[in-house]
Length: 160
Image (cartoon, rainbow, N blue to C red; front, side, top):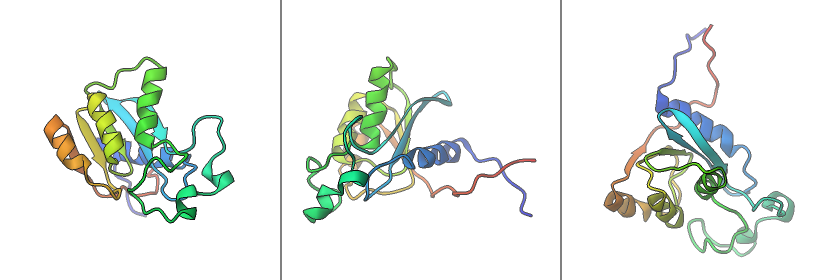
């Protein structure tokens, strides 16, 4: 049997973001995000309908029905993005994201990128690419470090 190795901190939080993504109710992309500061989880978020509203698993995907490509016409969707939910959860619980890192299964759309800039995050780490690269110049201008990593292994390694 292969000896388990301890994941580095980025792999650890990307794996957690992947588990958070399992709660997604989107039929297109399961996206999870985790805001972290000083190796401490501040908030998590996944993409899906607003709390208490019917979701795409129940109603179907309006974007699919209208043949809207990924990365376009964000307003024609009942879902809230994972990054938006990370910010909303921080606001609901009185937690500042300033100086934090956000680990996410996908890179952000430009709308989420604008919100993350204003939340004053300092680092964004992902392994998946969303079909919108407008965030790159915005993050560069705002001084947000971007790290695109390899997808972490999906299996959980237990030591001992």
